[in-house]
Every structure is written in structure tokens, then in C-alpha cells.
Length: 175
Image 1: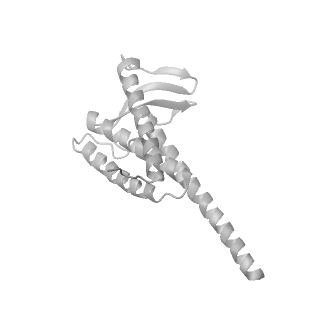
Image 2: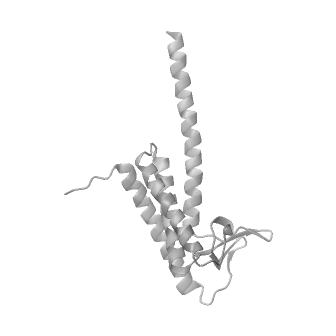
Image 3: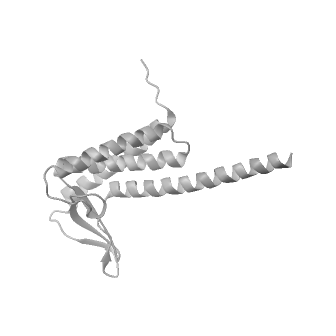
């Protein structure tokens, strides 16, 4: 029996798998080989490799040492992933498929960290003039880039739809 998966789901899940794999491989490599011992490794005047653990969500929000918090955050993330997979089935643009795939892959990468370590491992540190952006990882990057693409796609798609509706209305009025 052959199971047919529609093209947006297949493509979105391929992107999710790629983000997940890169995220997990990069975390493993940094943890096992680069950060032995943990330290700050300056790579450029504005970018370092660091070793950090985030027990909350973005920017450390909801951070807690409560043992069950990582399970709660993981369950919430998996519910969101379920919603995103459902959304992926109805995605109308390639940009939306890519964006949703990026978010799914990133979310699952961070869930795996929470389940394995009780926190998400962050190692990318961007800074300017002594101000540091909160450390992040490949999964966080996938989630952020995916969210930005979704917003832009939504804005551009609405703009395109509005323009085509205006043209249709103009044509109807001229006849």
C-alpha cells in the first residue's frame, strides 16, 4: 500500500528534517568537542561561541528550575507543531511551506534538548558595543527566520490579493 503525501507537507517536512538534523549535529559537536572545557570563543569582533542553557522559551521567558517545566514547554511545543503540520497541508505559497518547515524543525530540535537535558543548549552569541543578544542556536534561528518569512508572506499575499481584487473591480466597472 502506497501512502500519498501532498507536496506541501512533504516539502515542509523535508525542510523540518534538515533544520532538525543541522540543529542537533551542531549542538552535539559544540557540546562534545568545541566546549571542552566550556568557555567563550571569540570568532569575530561581534560573534562568539558560548555555552549556555535556557530553561525557558525565547529570551529566557518562563525560565524555571521546576522539574516539570521542561515537560510542560515540550508538550506546548508539540501541540504547536501539530497545528503547524495541519497548517502545512493548506499552505498556498512556497514561502509558507518553507517557513512552516523551518519552524517545525526548530521546535522539534529544542524539544529534544528539553527532554534530554531539561533545558535548551544555546551557543551562538552576537554582540555589539558590549550589548549581547541572548545566546541562541540553529533551532532558534529556524524558528525566527520561519516566523519572519510567514509574516512577510502574509503581508505580500494580502497585498497581491488586494491588487488583483482592485483590478477585477475596475474591469467590472468598465464593462
